[in-house]
Structure formats: structure tokens, C-alpha cells
Image 1: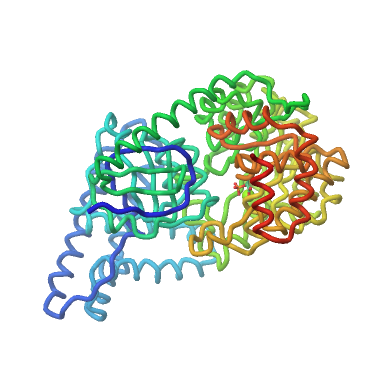
Image 2: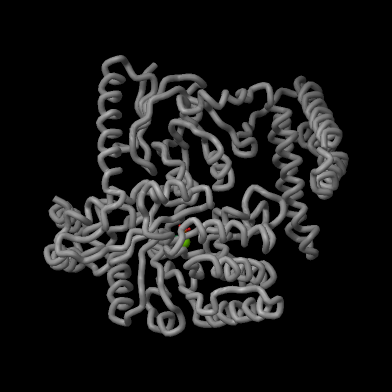
Length: 574
Ligand code: PEP
Ligand code: MG
């Protein structure tokens, strides 16, 4: 059967390939009732999965390489102990009996009950063992549903495959960076969720918010991902396929043409230089940054160094990652954002269970509550500042005391390095992200204390319009052109320019081609975006007359009618 699904494009281009269904065990658990007669069989399935998980752990313990860190063995032992505990190996049997439900569901329910108990534990070390318990549960779940799992495709074939998933966390997405899939689609997710941002950094056509793709598509079915129109075509007929192949080659040709602009300085028609910087998540993204000819790194989202691991990277490990970026960028600026963990970017099981994580202990709030973690990172960044043009960026500032405390920690970290005789740039600049409306509205108090500002439009829109970036049920309300958003963005750019505080935009608006001229018209001269968007934005800059867009931008700002705003914007981009 052929059909079409509509979603939101997070990465442009067209890709044609076969579906590869990917599950995250926890998210894919089905819930169904079973007849009383099936209860013993279901308990048998559960017991067999426990046995299989134990065998896997024993085998892993057996195969520990001699040079593996000592904690590895301890970690496996801990998982074996958790698995032996009756709260996991027996309690789900009672749930199967009492609720007549499938084994997977019983296990997930028990995991949630245990998770709540862990939450109430005061001791932070013990509380963190909740993540271990979840990992053990996932191992048992995989054993339960293992027969249905798809085998890993061979690497050489990956580019012909399109990953189809219900939902994936940013940490799951990070693992995809090791693969070379042809495209990527998910049922849920907003276009500026961190999962989507990571999907974009894979530089392959990607769609989110397809709702039922994971259930409607079968492994191996032919798919076309149209990241230009936000459409997924399943089992296209030959005519449609031929049309898409044509469009695909046209799109690739256009991309190649853009490649010629790599070394062209970005300037408007009247000769005003515009700074085009890149956003990265890991040092490995630098290749794309160089291919795009970026003038520096405007946002290094360091939290991705902290994901998919049980421990936190220490000072030396972080230093090496930051130094690699600083060195490879040579004299170009590298803005390193301090840990923005929380909300949808959870450290393995750490902060994700807060009542409202986007409004909770996130970013600078988390760092100020964990001085040790913060100081380790600040020392690592400061040490890297000796090797390049490094700047420090504080995420999600809303209060002056947060900035003052963070600056005090920077001084403390410098003092610690002085005591150790370790070099760093004593004049390293410290900036702040303006991504909470309160900060945008009270800008002078931040400008007084900080060397530069960076406008995080993803969160600014989330917090201004009160919509969760990750929630696809409200994704249609996520509107960068909302008058309130435009007022805030224009105000911040104008106020920073007037106060001579350097300002960049590093949220997704900076890489949105339709908004380039509008932002230039507001007075923005520094844009930071995913490297894949950079050359298209440069081309737009090269074709823009500043004097012409300034008046149009002011008109758009004054418009209170959304239809009119869109019409004026279309005219600006014509
Ligand atoms: C933003 O909020 O716009 C931003 C750049 O930060 P992040 O997307 O990592 O929250
Ligand atoms: Mg943000």
C-alpha cells in the first residue's frame, strides 16, 4: 500500500531508501490484557527473560578486557545484584497475576514504582542508582521482546536506510552520529527539540511529528523523505519515485553550487561584514564546520560530552575536547557554553523526573547547585583558553545573582589553576545566553556584567509562548513570527547594539533562511547556526541590501496581524 505522511522537517533535502525500524525498548512497550489461562505462560516468559539477562551479564563479566577500567566489573556486579533482587525478579510476577497483563507492562510498572522509591532516597549516590535499575530493566525488556528486534544492518548499507522511530532521546540521537543513515523520521518531537537539533547535525533529511509512522511502516519498505516539503512517501509508485529522484539530484546540485561560496567573505551588497558562526555538539562536528567555511564556533553545546555514559567527564577529558576544538579553529573564536543539562537533556536518569523539567533545575541553575561539576568544567575551559580564542557562555541566565555567582566561580577556577601553575587566558570573555523573556526584558543588568550576549531563540520562544519545545501536540503553536517573539528579538538586538555589547543569535532562527533578512534588518551582524545551513544563509546575505531591509523589518515589527506579517516577510524575501 502506498501512502503519504506529513510531519515537520528538521533537516532539508530528499532521500530515498528502505525503512529501518528502531526501538527504544522503554518507549515501545505494549500493554495488553491476557486471559487467566495465559498467566502461567506469561510468568514463564518473564522468568526466561530474567534468566537470559543474567546469562548476558555473566557472559559480559567473563569477557571484560584486561585493560578495562576497574569500575566496569563493579558496574556489572551491581547490575547482577539488582537483577537478583526480588523487587525486580519476583514482584512483576505478582503484577502479571493481579492485573492479567503482559510481562513487559508488568516490568515497566514495577520499574516506575521502584523509580519513585529511589526518588525519595536522601543519599545522592543511592538515588543515582535509579539509572542502573532502569538499565537492568531495559536489558530484561530487550530479552522479552528480543525476538522481534531487528538485526543491525551492515555498515556499508546504512546510507540506503531510513531510520523510523517512535521517539528518541537526545542521548539516543547522539549514538546515531556513529552511523551513516540516509534519513531519519520520528513520530513525535518538536522542530527545536534537542533530538531534532541533533538530527539536523547528522546532516541527512529528517522529519519529526509524523504521529503513526512507526506503527504504519514495515521494515524494508521503500520510503522517500522529503525534508523540503515535510512529507514522507511510503511505497511510492514508479512515477512518483522518478519525480523524487529528479528533485533529489537538483537539490544536490544546488548544494554543490553553494559549496563554491565557502571562502567568500560574508558581506551584504553595501559591504557590511556579517559574521557567520557554527553550532557544534562534539569535536567531531568540526569537519562540517570547516567544509562550511564558518568564521568560528558561536555555540559549543558541551552537555553532549556528558551523555550516554555512567560517569561524568573529568577535567582532563573535558580539557582535551575543548582544546581540540580551540586548536583546530586556530585564531577563530570558540564560544563554549557551560553545561546546559536538564529538561530534555538528562544526565543518565539524573534530573529528568522533576515535575516540570523545562522550568526546573536546568542549565546555569543546575551548575550553581553542583559547584564541583561547574568548577571542573570551568577549569577545563580556562585551560583550553590558552590554546585558542575561547570564550565562556552561561546558559539560561535570568537573575543578576546567577551571573554574579557564576563569575565568582570563574574567579575561583582561575585561582585554582594559578595555585597549580596551569596557564590560561586571564582575559577570557564571559557571556550570557538571553533565552528567558525576563533576561530579554531586563537586558542592561546583564550587559553591565557580561562581555557578550547570545540570543537563544529556541528557548526564548518556548518560554515566551509557554509551549514545550519537545511536545509535538503543541508544535503548531511554536511560532518565531509571533509578534511577542519578534518584539523581544528585535529589542535585544537593538539594546545590545546600542550598548556596544556584542550580540549573536545562536538559536534555530539564525539558520532559518526565511528570517535572515529580517534579522539583518533588526540590526543583527552575527549569526550562529548548524554548519549545514551556513552557506545558504551566506548566499542570502550576499544578495541583501541592508538599507532596503531595515525599513521592511520595522514594518514587520509593527504588524499585529499574523497574515500581514507573513505577507510582508514574503515580500522581504522576494
Ligand atoms: C536556544 O535555546 O536557542 C539555544 C541555542 O540553546 P539550546 O537549543 O541548546 O537550548
Ligand atoms: Mg537554550
